Amino acid sequence: MTAAPARAPAVTDAMIDALLADVARIPDEHRTYSCGTWEARSKHGVGPELLERLVCAGLSSRDGDDGERRYDGLDLDNIALHLGLSSVRRIAIRSWGRTWNRVRSGPGHHVLRYVPSCPEPGHQGPCIYRLALPGGERREVTLGPLDEPPAVTLESERPRPDARLPDDLAELCHEIARLRFYLLAESIRWDADFMRTTGIADCGGSSTLMLAGAKRLGYQARRSFGLIVAEPFSTPHHWAEIRLDGAWVPLDPMTLKILARWAPSVPDDTPVTQPLTGLVTRISGEWVPPATHGSTESRVSYLTEYHARERTP
Image (cartoon, rainbow, N blue to C red; front, side, top):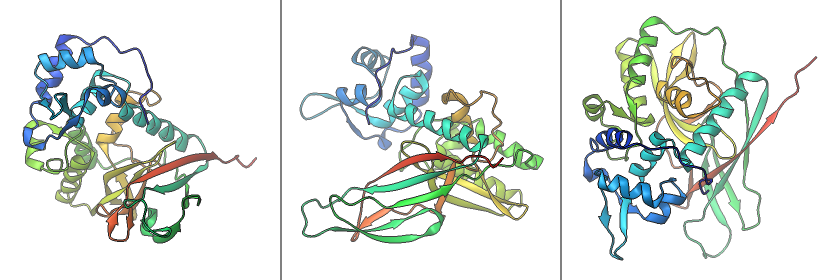
């Protein structure tokens, strides 16, 4: 997917300086300098002129073997989000917001298709994949080049409008929501000391703090890995679930903060204490490869369609 062209918002030097001050808090050993100028523009919405301004203001970069300057893709992801640029990541967040509204407006369901990519193209015979599906199901499928990818139907679970968290759990949600959201490399995203010291976290890291905080308060809590369900593509995600009134409730104040800030369809004052019910579907307690091809992990696209269901008169 390529970010749709859009008129870039006005970016001031003060905005750049404040943003790069946060980006600089991320140690350099957690960067991968693989993103060139073309990708900066096509994927992240960061054009050459803005890129040069960022470098002059202190954005870290390296010269590649071909002489072209290289950047860290997560740095550019974060810059695009915080400066309001039209990027692939921002487009995805807008789609989350649309799903968030749909599951609250009426009955419906999503059809989720796993579209794996063969990690060993050109091998003999069809591809045999083992898929990790919502609800913990493991399914083996055989796919040829023209075969329809396997589909899963997910009924939209509507949240309870009268649900209210206990006061101590609500305060924990507000505490975590005060962290500043930045996408982080796998090598640092789970580091609780880094999050507490810098005030920076991503969804995975903030779920760790939510889990630890809820357990400290005496609640039964578990980690969840699965998908944010949205059209046209669902997105892998980590969150925490808390046992309340006999049910597992997905609590993710960081994602609610992201939706309120960057999804135009979600009100700015959306409470960060609301459960993510209907927006996420759980696959397992820890990360698992969504698809394997033999013993090799396969990349997967999660093609997603929404189908509204007519209300009964």
